[in-house]
Length: 350
Image 1: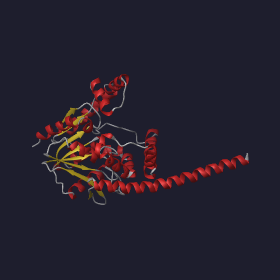
Image 2: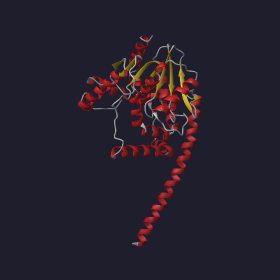
Image 3: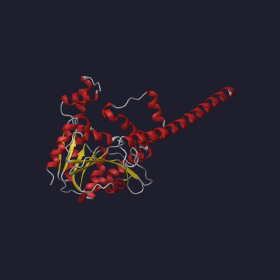
Image 4: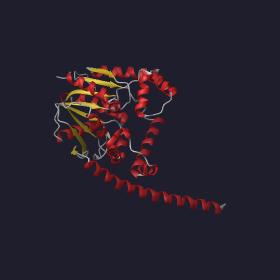
């Protein structure tokens, strides 16, 4: 028994040593690859670091129109500048499209300060001013950024001439208890993801699997991959850990005002909507799967969510809800329809 125990102990020790060696190799591989990521983004014109105070933020400016739209990415969407470059091709020349990443996203720098709603909005405002982008702005927050867009237009209304909420977070959405098993599991999941990313294991696994580039990004697929590869997952993880507190900060800041706003929803209404979605992304859903998806989209929980969204839209004031059935990333799924809604909205601004 003692001999067997020693053998098992040695095997475990050898495995631990091999794991540590692999971890060290992955770490240095990650650092080397991130350097190449930055070089590629600089070469392709996606790198434009601007001071946001104690760190730099990547700001991409497209066009020179009279309407200045500030595009704000959803959670972890480091390749948002690539998506917006593609989307800009569907917009008119009257629009200046400015994409601002948050701390840790892509090649944006980091900060030792907590990733609060106030800090994120302040750093974005500072970066815009230092980039020479003057107010008034038309905010265009996608998904998670609805938190920051809501806080910004409520706290600094003089800077905002309009808001385009792209299927954004809204008051009452994504509620979670401050403690308990669900909260613990949520943090464990985020910490595991952070470890895999920072150690380089995620990149190494993708390389071994031969991860294919995303066809959605077309000629910019390598740039999109570079944005994700360069991301500081420690900061994006911290942002998600603060998600529920940041929610509360934004919602408590709401002051109903007359700033023109539209909220673009993406609710499925018919089976044809699901089929179009399935065909675009080539998911290969069966007729049965698509029918289930439709039932989920029109079920009781969805009805309750829509009611919460409607109350939020009414609360922020002067906001019109417009539905484009499709993906949460509606600007890539139906760019022409999305662009038309945006341009019609802009025509109504003073």
